Amino acid sequence: ARKAFKSWSKLNPKERGKYIFRIARMIQERAREFAVIESLDGGKPIRESRDIDIPLAANHFFYYAGWADKLEYAFPNKTPQPLGVAGQIIPWNFPLLMAAWKIAPALACGNTVVLKPAETTSLTALKLAELIRDSGLPKGVVNIITGAGETGTEIVNHPDIDKIAFTGSTAIGKIIQKSIAGSKKKSTLELGGKGANIIFEDAAIDQAVEGIINAIFFNQGHVCCAGSRLFVQESVAEIVIEKLKERISTLIVGDPLDKNTDIGAINSKEQLNTINNYIKIGKKEGGEIYQAKCKVAKKGNWCPPTLFLNVSQSHTIVQEEIFGPVLAIQTFRTIDEVIEKANNTPFGLSAGVWTEKGSKIFKLTQELNAGVVWANTYNKFDPTSPFGGFKESGFGREGGLHGLEAYLKLK
Ligand code: NAP
Ligand code: MG
Image (cartoon, rainbow, N blue to C red; front, top):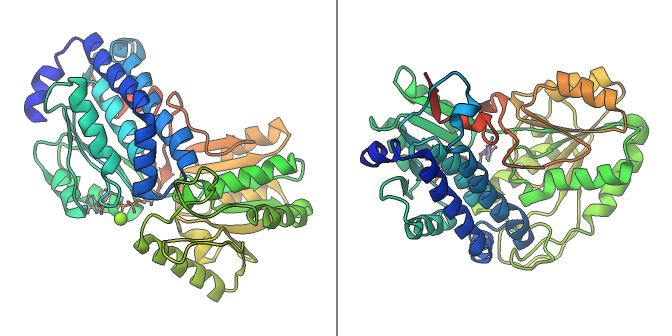
């Protein structure tokens, strides 16, 4: 990567853009294959891999291909220059998509890359490596290295790395920050979350219920920005909870490769244990559990959609990231009360607001301490739109114009 940086960083930016564009086209051409591998490897429903993960991954390459020769326009009166070799470490929940979020902007800015996928989900990253080789990208520009946590540590500590881009847990993010303190290395960290999804009494209730379902059960809840805390205004709480209970009983949990599946397999035995442990804690601390009855195969890592009622701010399942299909439900009376509760966790990644009133959306967008706030929708992603957190959810943005800043120095 260090050697390749010499010529890659000096290549005409228009040519860099063409390479990235070619990678995007090739992902599109092999989309079905990528989708199947992603679902086999990670357990997510094929409908999600096919309709969301893979097309979005291709779109990130298309989007950043367009920026490669326009960096001067993005940063007027400055001379944007690449940082060097980017060490990139990604988690298991959106394997190909996270690789795309990392590699595409780094290349557009003229950096070279050493990327480590998660040990449990390395297959689409390896397939991408094969595709990138076939695309004719100069050797050494993109390097994919598999391995467990210690391989990540090697990348973090290596003297030839100029920048660490990490997506993963807050715990590992803190370790990385300490390891690189005082060094020349720059970093961006995309860490955990505990998103608040807020339903006001004037919301379109049926739409909001669908939004709640999507916010917490998309990708088995293995989503950093999942709406894992639900706040319902008291006057509509009963009806919303009733509808939620009905709706989760229709969700199909099962074979990730079945196109009718709504909730696939939990990514690993380890993650299933973590989730079950949180469910135990939730019950022990007095939460009232409601789980949909679902038929699943004996073998495999399954978790039914799970609701927790009667929980409050001090409950562990309200404060900590579970990373599974478990929703903690609270009620509120006033807008100021819900803002305070929503902001009261160590995280600051995402939030959702459901109301017909523009003034409320405006107020919450201002006052919620979250890097991403959705209004009357949830889990909407687009390459043009920056994503990232505040507080212990990390710093730096991926996507959009701001995603370029992570891979440039501005002279
Ligand atoms: P993780 O345990 O922190 O692992 C993330 C990556 O770091 C993996 O590739 C992992 O390798 C590697 N790693 C482990 N120990 C390391 C070390 N000491 N030094 C360097 N790298 C190390 O997180 P995860 O369990 O895979 O993913 C779930 C977390 O990611 C959640 O907290 C979630 O919120 C967060 N996430 C955040 C975003 C965001 O954009 N903010 C997006 C997605 C996920 P191995 O897996 O091979 O051990
Ligand atoms: Mg891990």
